[in-house]
Length: 90
Image (cartoon, rainbow, N blue to C red; front, side, top):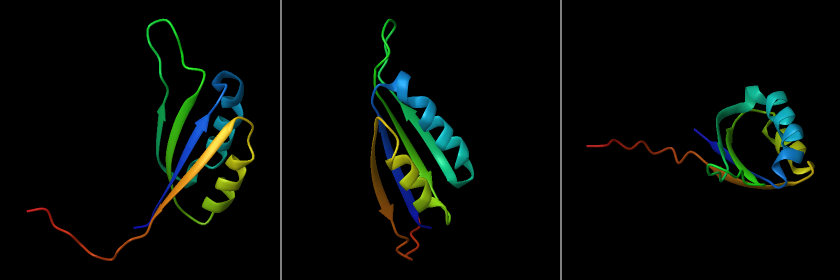
């Protein structure tokens, strides 16, 4: 199985998240897994956030291009190809 991971770093989170969320919702059927991370404590929320998504399917490239054009988004990508080898844990 091929895995494509997008790392989406969002600056000025409160201002820029609505556009990111709209894109994630629009492309939701291409998302296998989504994890949101931001620093927070009892009194402060971080002004930035990080979202990791594992994407698949024919729309992955268009999804990436759309995210890349959003204000306040630094986007990075990791591609993992299936090696074809099967490993068993013993």
